Amino acid sequence: MPDPRGRRGARYPAIALLATAAAAVLAGAKSLLAIGEWAADAPQQVLASLGYRPDPLTGVIRPPHGATLRRLLARADGDALDAAIGQYLQHRRPQPGPAAGDRPALRRVIAVDGKTLRGSRTADLPAIALLAAMDHTGSVLAQRQVADKSNEIPAFRPLLDTLDLDGVVITADALHTQHDHGAYLR
Image (cartoon, rainbow, N blue to C red; front, top):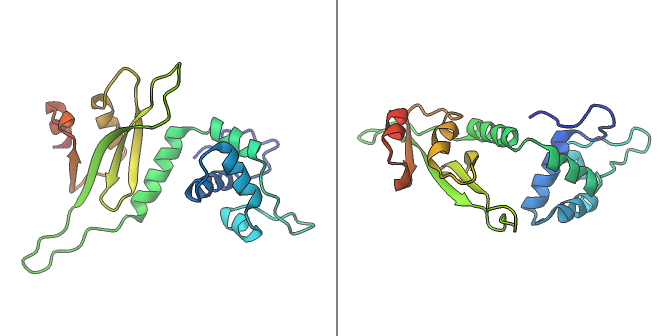
């Protein structure tokens, strides 16, 4: 994932900052302020595990300020981050089981579904809608934002273009029973 910051003045690695935001959200942080507070309260060994380096003179790891996290999250390319996380999860996915006796080999199954993000609508902007591809172990492999004033149909093919679909069963809503989608998957 490309670092959106300039090289000058970047004290913390971008990967460590993104990992901090993810860890804070997993720990229950629901806002940018809460993410910054979580980082400030994180123990030294947690900060080291996230990828921060200790000061060479004191050996102490200084946590990033909340504003540093906020600026990086505001400037990060969401599509590139989605793609990087999706690739990581695809490499970690378990392989389908082998055939045994009368039982055929297990196939990998990917579900495609769209959701509207709760709380994303403002007075000026409509709610954000995403189309996601998820395997049946619960891992989101890829997702795309659905364009405003559109539906999921135009986002279906670009979403699946990022995935390896050899020998995969795709499930989707009835909305996706389109001739073009069937031809693409075939």
